[in-house]
Image (tube, rainbow over all chains, first blue to last red; front, side):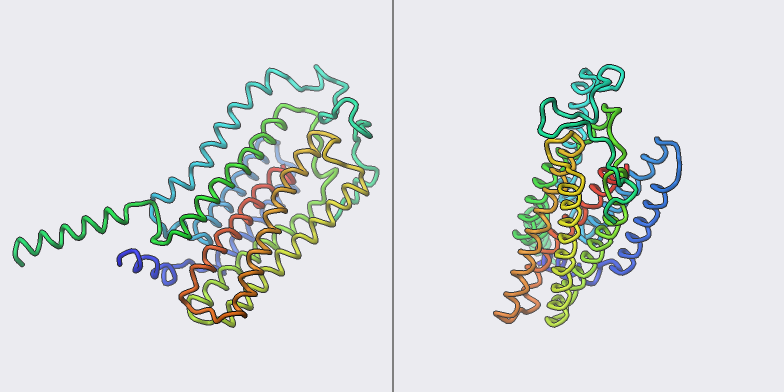
Length: 133
Length: 206
């Protein structure tokens, strides 16, 4: 019974969806501004990741109603993040050992496979100034 | 109140709490969808983590802007955000017994998904036939096609899922009691939106 009451209360408790939509749109606009600005790389990447995570959390909390669910569900939802962090940290040492740098592999352009079909090092396209838009 | 009555109430409450202690909502379908989404998130997460680790070590990684159209994908992002709004409006419609509103917004959500897929098809067409980029060309292209392709498959699945729900709403009269069906479908659709938000940043902007 309490469960039903709780489930029924979602509708009354729900966030202002239009406001969330506006926040998401504004954050996307800020992302594009940050992208266009010439910040130092670390700052730029940090800002873009923070903005993306903020948007993702807003979608999960308000559109997916995670904010209104029991905290137990939060644990379930957090599991993938822990595993992703673990996966990334496990991969890093291996890739560091390979040291894919231009210093060690000057011939290697963005990881082109040797002998791959049509594998001339893909320089930026001739019409790079006109990507699909 | 007698002690016996108090004990009974206390006991009943304890039983109810114990019953409800499980992780979430008193709706097995919703819990099932969450568990599915968590599994799906692990797949996407592994892909994004591998992409991040590969890219971090590779100083020759190209600037995505040289290959990818940021303006087009910004529009795609906006389309998905709009479709998330229409999805919650569809749920709001059925929660209030307004089936016409639910159908209208569900239809708009499906339309948003199709529009997104059309944009992605255009982008892939440009990259494959215009720039001669393939999954075998480089790590950059391989990770790009795998991540965006896997996400595109999810959007396709979502369009079919929501489209089926919309068609069924015409075949039999939906009532407010069917709101859970729409809510569960909405969870899937918002997850697709959430993943795109991350892909847009990690693959296109950074």
